[in-house]
Length: 82
Image 1 (cartoon, rainbow, N blue to C red):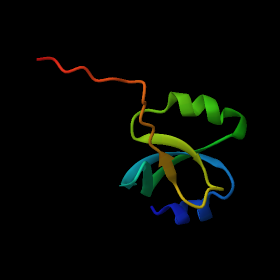
Image 2: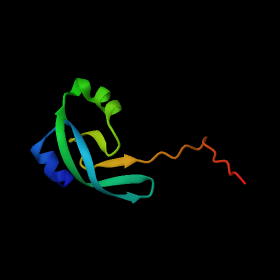
Image 3: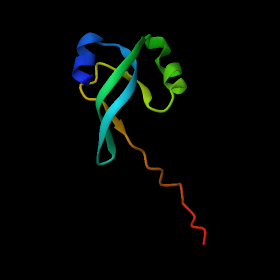
Image 4: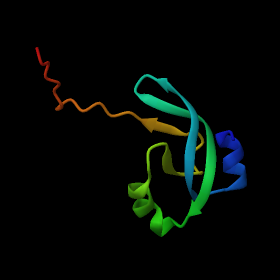
């Protein structure tokens, strides 16, 4: 389901959604298609976000676009083993 359709069905609320399709644009993951799982009460949104599994996220339908900023940790160093 497209994000705009989800926003119309679940106006102004947090939702637990499964991410079906997305594309990367610079340092952002732009979500194109989701499957709504269930609405989340405002007071439970943070707690539910920390309980999400890979491929799911809690997001608010007030956001016109579904964008996740990709964080690249500059303090993390990769060590090559030779």
